[in-house]
Structures are given as structure tokens and as C-alpha cells.
Length: 67
Figure 1: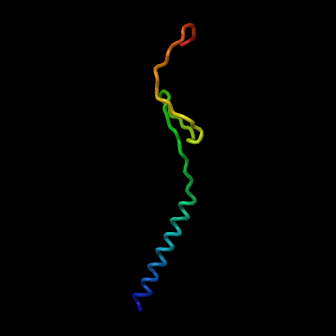
Figure 2 (figure 1 turned 90 degrees about the vertical axis):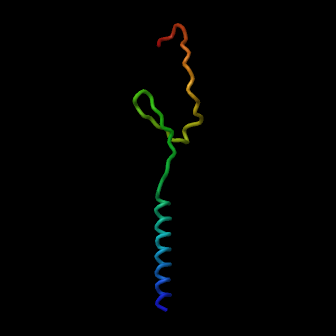
Figure 3 (figure 1 turned 30 degrees about the vertical axis):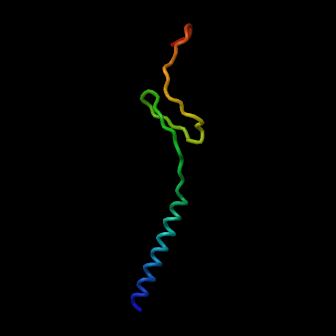
């Protein structure tokens, strides 16, 4: 019988820890970010604001426009 009570205490502790883990997961808020650099500075947008990410392409200068 003493082993049975010990097992019950262990199972109760496991259930308690599972509940605590679920509670902390529910409280955790996550955000997806798109992070990029511009010069030496870092910037970020929330992922849900970004529709598309295009690869870098060489910039073509247009005659008569400022650099």
C-alpha cells in the first residue's frame, strides 16, 4: 500500500506540472517578424504586414533623376 500512495503523489505532481506548462504556453504571445538592414541600422516589420519579399536586383539609374 505505501507504494500506491507514492505513485498517486507522483501522478498528481505530473498532472500539476502539465497544467502549469499549459498555462504558461497559453500566456506566451508570439509574433513573426521580418528583420532587415538598411545601411548600418536594423529594421523589422510584423510578418502579417509583409506580402512578398523580392530578391535584390541591381538598381538602374534613370537619366535626369538625382542620385
